[in-house]
Image (cartoon, rainbow, N blue to C red; front, side, top):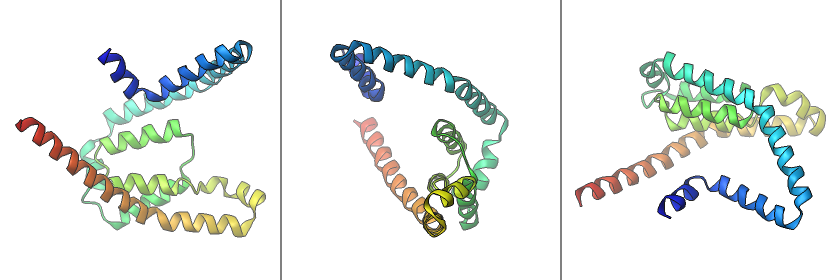
Length: 181
């Protein structure tokens, strides 16, 4: 029972989706079946991309020197690194199942939280998509939104880093107190 609860807690999204499918199955089996088929089709459509991304991330994890990443993107990196991270975020395109694992690996290689936060914040700009945004929502809106997001990337990255440091310190203290008991 403990293992099941631990699994449910760690995989809560999966548990919720399965529960919703079961609920749908009882309410309208035909539509639940259609939803399941659509889900499988979607999964099979993105599966090659996911496999390729995880393969590339595995190679990145082995080939890229952790020390080099930590030196360039880690705690010792300065303001210029955050500017570059924000610029990188604006040209970064791709779905979340590509970007999040990439940033996770970069973080595991020693990148500071402010870099990760700046990239993710600036990612909302998506420079390659700006022409489409201008066509749909107008030049003034697009430029205003892009400028505000770009200007907020570094401050938000730094705020995120401060929040994560506080959280990491509390976690370390809890671990220390737990091991001394």
